[in-house]
Image (cartoon, rainbow, N blue to C red):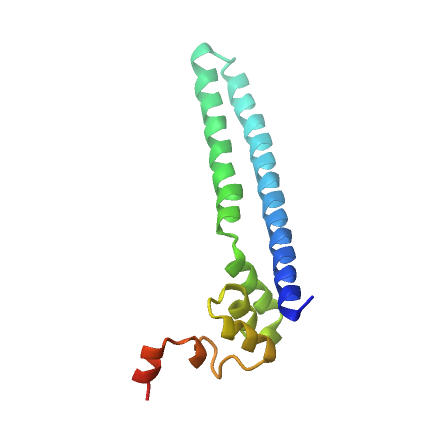
Length: 142
């Protein structure tokens, strides 16, 4: 297995772990909201003696709150979690990567990926290597 394949495997495993973490946090939030809101709405309904006109609005409120919690605590975090986000997290935790990990993970230039593993990608963070620039843009540069 080459170094690039090992790095890709590492990123895939890290992304899977982050997805599991986001899903478990979302499930916990949904459970807490459902439990607490159910207890609160039952107390309100009990106080109003579960009148015929009270049960449906309370039930609708419970379902709407659970749906909002599902979207904000589960769906949005899972949707936002992508390879780039995971890579940036890894780079923050391990500063030695020096943006090379991001280049390898989402870079479109084959030379940039190879050079990132060799430690010679760019001189400045965020700058693209000359080999990644098109021929026309290379000619325009001083």
